[in-house]
Amino acid sequence: MSRRILDAVDNESTDFSVLAAQITQFFDDYMVPHFATEENDLFSAIEQELGPLAAVKELVAEHHTMRMQVTRFRVPGLEIGRREIEEFALNLERHIFKEERLFSSVSQQSEDKDRVRTEIIDL
Ligand SMILES: [Fe+2]
Image (tube, rainbow, N blue to C red):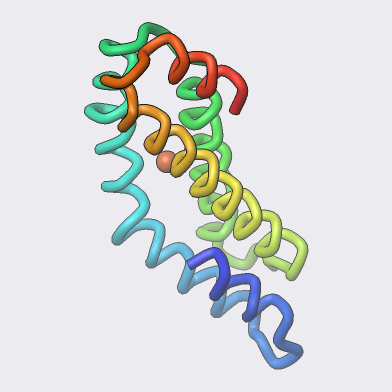
């Protein structure tokens, strides 16, 4: 999704209010339940296994940032520009990358819990 948004941002004919509405719909349909699953189940399961992690706190803070960005997209009459949409897409892209690294590290936890914890702290 983030790549598709960035492609649209680069397209001169993009209507940013339409794009903001599409992002909002996607956010509500897919990202809201996805964030809830991560925050309520997945992250707590990871921290139960490995203890409290700064990386998890950071990911939750990023969810909050993206929620706030989309909250602005919902404001009637508020003009949403290229820069704001691009910032959302880049936040999403970085967030996904960071989570993939976290989940990849956690999946190896049975091999060496201490090494995995060190890798996660370095994210
Ligand atoms: Fe997430």
